[in-house]
Image (cartoon, rainbow, N blue to C red; front, side, top):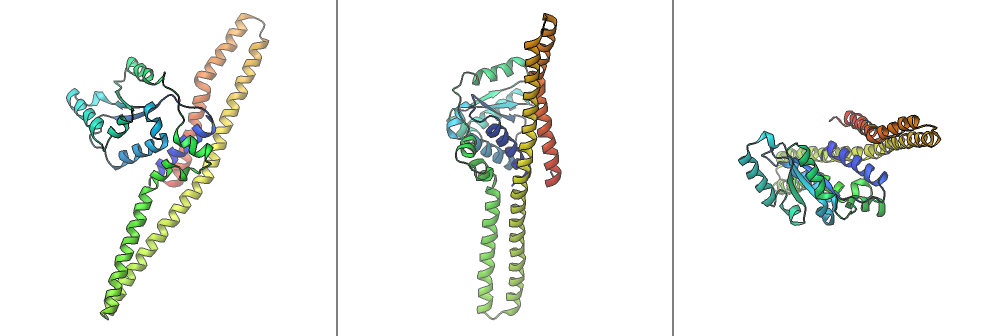
Length: 284
């Protein structure tokens, strides 16, 4: 379980469930570098989490965008693209659910084409929105959160299997009256038990800290939204009271600037600050 993945999921969850409550999405874009010729464990886990976050019914609004085409030859890129689209270990199952796979060549027309793919879609809610807002689940209880917890579950199963094997060997040593082997096995069992307890304590601490920092991140984002709304209301009030065209144009320009840069720039800074704070706390 990667702490950074938990943090990213937390930020996504906060934004779409707190500040876009009731809002449905016409499209979701997933970026993948075509220059990555290995689809390793991290990439696999991230895409599984992405699918669980969206939900199966929302996949028809998903566009999987391949980037970094300038880093590969056309033939290698096309070969990799075909593999991504047809291999069940990669994107095939999502494409079978009507997700689109498109290229982005870093041009304006390419970016516009991607947006045209989703702009007329029927808006849909993400699974995580329904789980958190409607069902009242904690982020760790959502399908996306559970996907991130699979590694912990696998580790727990491994510990239990090893503990069971050691117990069976210990029982055999007791039966054979082999005291030396029995003592060695009991020492190994004690070490394994300590590892299991430490892993569980680390997990409990991680989830506890995330609940606290989730609340702090929410307060940070809330203050950004409130300040943005306050400034916008003040400018709209000034615009209504403006006495001449020059003053109106000046205030309108400020409103345009606020809409274009103010909210999203501040939101980005708040998120970046939260990432740095939590990153230092969890060491990534």
